[in-house]
Image (cartoon, rainbow, N blue to C red; front, side):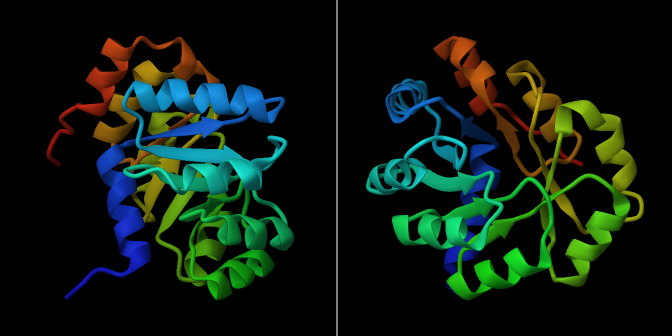
Length: 204
């Protein structure tokens, strides 16, 4: 059976393992960062809506072959509609909102809501979500995500926020579907980044 578009997006994110989160003060800075990361081999990019011109950046990036572009820090329905219209293949929010989830469902775009507490996870699960953003991942830590696997064995997390590129492999080995990393990626050499991208995830 042929995979749906949303299933293809999930597969791309899992294969990429690393999502570059772009948060910049202006469009020019964002575009420069994006080009540097693509040159280093990044294939999954999340452009946050705190970045000026986010929709335009998404529209430009959506035209590049081999690049999966998504929208991040989406907290309003208007932003979600703009992101989907611009070509975002996935939409990420810092928290969970049932109203936003309903809006994005109508857009037929892969939505990854943010959670941090068991109560938030339960609410998201009640809405049918099985892939969630763990935010802030760096603050909660790998052990916290592992502990959540006890009561929520069927949930896959994408930890984001305050995570150093050197920790990506540890998060993936601990069961994360993918890991979101922000500005620190710019400081990683192409060689080190390739090592992360080509990592061999331990078999569970």
